[in-house]
Length: 285
Image (cartoon, rainbow, N blue to C red; front, side, top):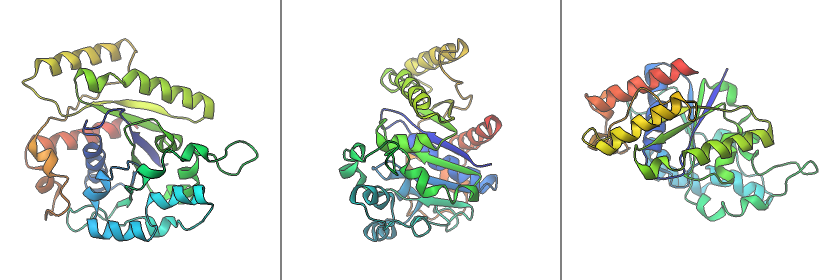
């Protein structure tokens, strides 16, 4: 059965996209899972990490990104074709990973996201604003073992489309005050949305990212998060911690020529941590 997992945080710059891309690549390459990464974030960072930028711009102009899917609902058109939009063999590892597909995003989502709540909803209408993505991909879901969704740093309509089809959600966060401040809001809003829509979604856990071992604040915040999780206030805190390194940022460069995941993520901690994170995730689902 397909497992659909959204990654969410209300704050940008927490390593959300890097983590989502790495999980997709490790699941597909090391564990031979069939993976689809859906980039719902208008910043498009996951998209340009996994495909050539010129090819992406061409697809965007041809209506072969998620922008066209949402525009169709606003403009009452039907240009979007899921099979044309999906990029096969995504990633720059070895010229593309056989089991990894990408549904690319578009900068144009920024311009239309505020209009999406205006789409009519209710029992007398065919489409609800939060079910647009589900209607588009339901026919292909069974083609994959995992669908990972990189959500925008908010809980707007586009993010709710990802949550609506998800079995689980992950919250990546830097162990500091600002990055963890929104965790209760995420948990509460998703739970309310779950009750209102009768969907079946659970928090898979919180992943510590961009950790600095020399920071006393980081250690203190991690200790507090684990204490809250042990009391049932928060979901599990993953044992695997993703450190802040230059290599993490460099791994997002699609133009780099790499043949293996070790070459992409380095032969040290970054590779090992993403490898362990992937194994830990598999043990929970």
